[in-house]
Image 1: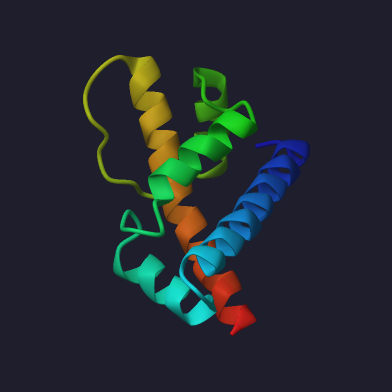
Image 2: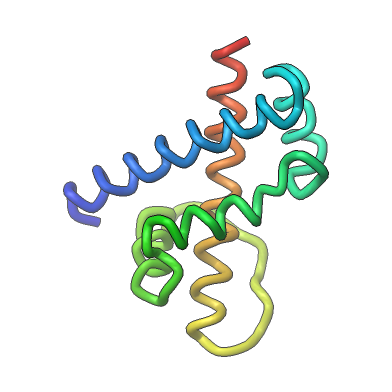
Length: 116
């Protein structure tokens, strides 16, 4: 990955983590509750990690095969659970969202811990 692409990815991740942390704190009445819920069930009530990642991908125009490749290139060393079978286009998007969601949850936990 080129340095300018890494910089763009790092900006995307930081922006997404800040937005997600802010939403979690508001929805869950405080930082401690937000962190506990994120760790307990990233898809649970008041967290909805996958929905947030889908919205971020749409906001940053990454909900297409080129965007998926950008994310996967940045996260090449991370492992992700196998995606559902289907068209390559669909699988790329699914893998990118899954990998980004995993990293976003970890980054958001880190930010929430720092806020506590």
